[in-house]
Length: 344
Ligand SMILES: [Zn+2]
Image (cartoon, rainbow, N blue to C red; front, top):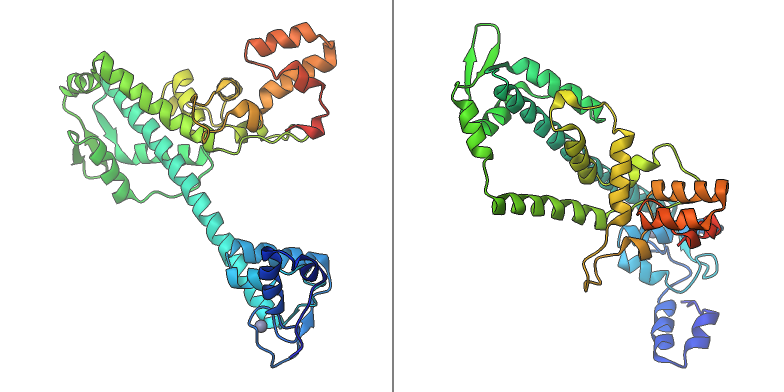
């Protein structure tokens, strides 16, 4: 059996790593398929650099360690690796399935967040109406509101009537379901206002704990999000995409209240500006090295970049930019002077 020898391996054989690698390289047989290691059909050669990059990428993402070990010795064309077409197709299909699954779980997570937000806005609307003296709600209307809001937030979905009713009743256990022959009505007792007020009453310590919990949720999202990576331009959706969903939600709740009827179909610029300013000024806890500090390691959100670069282009004023930076709304003067393509 003809065994493969690689230049690099021979040169490295003086140290232990070299020996280890040489053993691996030698385990690759040029006459067998690198995917299934069989040799009973028509073998193809890898001819392009792209092929090497693609196979390596797919193997890495699929965590196919056996394959990765077989192709560790070097570029697939250089090590004269061979393959059967069906084996390559199988690998491609497996990889495609993996990507689809990843995409599906990402959009499921996104959908869950949107549904949670719309539902909170809906129950806030019901509570606000109760305070204003409305005690009966048509469930079909509530569902319609909820579906419209989901649609606004980018999720087109028909909501199951029964499940929706159960969800609302679970949230308002004191409400009663009545049927007027045509519609299902959600009815609250007149004493509900007092009960609601009572349930909202907290002492200072409880309030502080609630705020602390909210801040912790948002900070976790901030420090685990990818942020915006600036490449000398500001794409149309960059502001929206640079801000984590929980931060946008919290800022919107502060700016507009939570009522579903008071929401914009889109995130307002004011909300995005406030959220980006928070992001830009967010600092990690002292003494923890596993939480990233946005200023040193993470990319800045679009707004302070835009302000700094724009003011720099139009005024060249170091003093003005330093002032804006000090106020926490612009990147530093040093960053403004850098080539936009070489930002950290
Ligand atoms: Zn094969």
